[in-house]
Amino acid sequence: MASRVVLVTVERVVGQALAEALTVRLELAGVEALSAEQLDGLRPDEFDLAVIELEVPDSVERCRRLADAGLRVLFLVDAPDDAELLAAVEAGAVGFAASSGGLRELEQTLRAALRGEACVPRRLLGGLLRGLVQRRRELDAVEQRLESLSAREREVLGLLGDGLDHREIAAALVISPETSRTHIQRVLKKLDVRNRLEAAHVAQAYGVSMVDQERRLAR
Amino acid sequence: MSSTSDTTSPLAEPQPTGGLAGSSAARPRRLGEAEGDAVATPAGARLLLNDTAAAVWELCDGQTQVVEIVAAMGELYSASLATIERDVWAALRELQRLGLVQPLEVLR
Image (cartoon, rainbow over all chains, first blue to last red; front, side):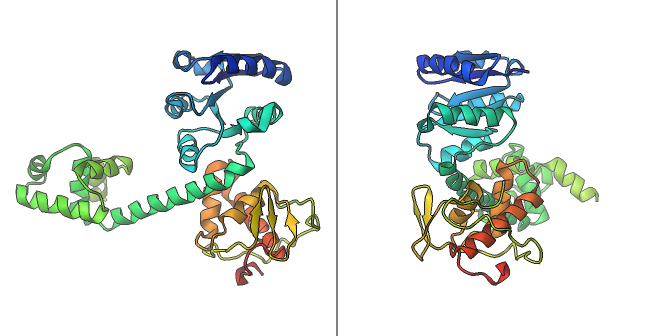
């Protein structure tokens, strides 16, 4: 079945020109060139692939929304840095097409993306993999720090993640506010974070919650 | 994902597949220099590696473990980790044969 592709570029005329060229070359059912704002009104299930220029405003967030809805997203990039590539992959992008590669390369990349393959141009692959290695190390480091927490400190972290302040934590755990403060300070130090907000983010990101605690205690 | 291919050296010859499982904790270190899309060996040959081999070569910084390379590739490609691991080791063996990574006992 012929595929439908949506193209979103900074300059809409570029998207329209690409749409015309790609419709013929790829024998697509349709290629629509949209503005970033029009993309927000898009029904993801009506398309097979979205191609978004990385420089489009909030392109990564827009990618995340579409990818979460099940649409494959390919980024059209010029000279992205490793952090941008990593953010795009984390947002669910299936790959990248380099605008410097020309129309023929874009056509091949789109074919691969429509076949369900991951597409990363060779010159971007090393940097992206380095970024993924680095991110994995950071995640492992945080997990190790979480392992170093005592059961009580883990409870405190879970409550911080639920948005409680030190008095509420004291009340929940039936301890004094001073003891609550001490536990919080130890948690911050062990996690190597600057403040409670950062600790709360860690708790949320790693699923440390009181529900989790109660499940562990019940074992 | 595939093993190395090359346009300027005899890379097409069959590679052994058994008995080469190495330590995933190894931290291979690359040799040679990037020259555009090609890699220059210390011996002066200019080789064109395929995407997988080129990416593995770039990640061989003496710090990154083989298991980290495999995990990073696993996040990008839908192939199974076992397949990716096999391809990474195949690429490493070829890179070693070409003199593009420091010899590692575990690769022999």
